[in-house]
Image 1: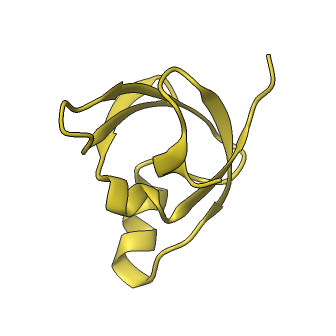
Image 2: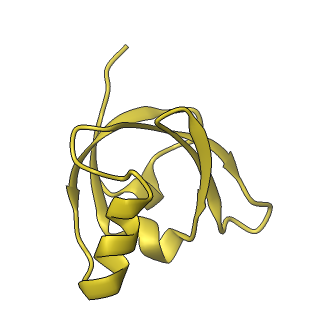
Length: 76
């Protein structure tokens, strides 16, 4: 599943970061690296962007960019 499809308040673990060149480097620089826990905190009224909780901070990300991040849902 990709990060853009993760439901609100759902926790997951990043398994892979895709994208090319500068986009991939930027995602990694923001802390979106494999084996990192991530949770969807908020979704904008029109559905884009989404706010994530990663490594203790809030990160807003466009859905287009979130499609490049593969996640595995954590079971409670």
